[in-house]
Image 1 (tube, one colour):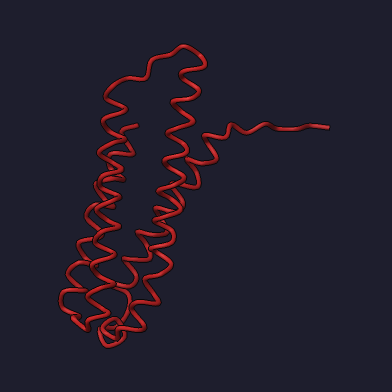
Image 2 (cartoon, rainbow, N blue to C red; image 1 turned 90 degrees about the vertical axis):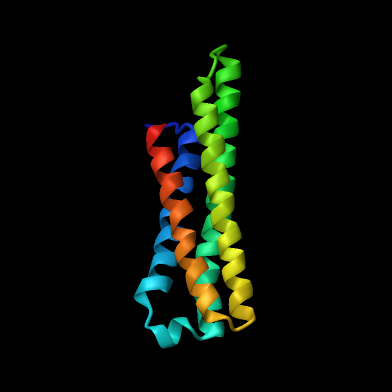
Length: 139
């Protein structure tokens, strides 16, 4: 019987990448794929934004766990992680926090029926996602 062992870090990295792609794609679809009258309906836009928000939260946690496992594996094998890697991951997570904040501002604007502000911040949510993805490619 063949049993393949999978390194836990790679599982969490895969979950992180898939969730971030889903969150980015979800925001992109809501912002540019939905017709304007549907997108500007507060209840519809809020319900369509719940899945990208959930994916962002799960992906963020998976990324934190993968980073913690990376530090744990390095400590157990007496390997020092490059300081630039720590800096890149720190900045990347700050971008993802900014994306989450923009999603929150979007939800609040939709609750207040301010569709112009909601559309602006939904579009702004895409910027930190792209910047975080570019930093992730450096790792």
